[in-house]
Length: 271
Image 1 (cartoon, rainbow, N blue to C red):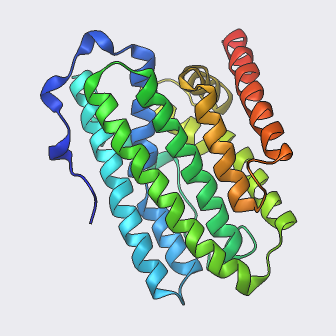
Image 2: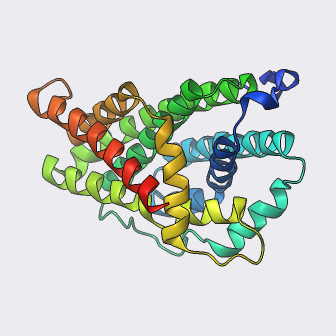
């Protein structure tokens, strides 16, 4: 069972004066991605067809992710009465599809699939932690605190299963690192960019991946503090099999923070 429900959110505490339009645009995009967990669960069910325990876990994961999307969508409607979540979400799913006609992992192994899932959960747990700490709006802070906790728990779920498959499949550190790097690079793909477009652009505005990636990133990157990138790097190094506290780990944390800040500045200049 989930640890919380929408009834646990203090909706009546909403304070519009503490919410910026930039933050709301990012929240609207996040609602699209979170809500769209069904297709990915179908794909996972095919990749792990012989593992009924994992398939059951994936169903629970889907339930919690859908709840995240619904709660964020409800929040967006509270903050912007002109925003209709169901209509915007349909626009997103009409234009962005997760491939489900596969019976093998696109990562080359079940270990790789679970590792890629860990990378995603790392990104979401750090994002919602950063947004929670960046906002003073009490309802959004409460929502992000709960979602960040769920995403970290999901990371632990997938990491636990990954270790089982890693031993059986013999996927070494180098291959795990390649999967991690590949999945991180995919953060610039169409999913988030199109979610931003579907959630925020006017109906007649054409979609541009470059523009939407830039408009999303220039807002979202500003939420982060060094502690958020440090924790994310720790989580990524753990699934690869490297010591987060070693010299390589320390160098990776500094690199990640500097990279994020330099990219945020570049996005601002481009905007």
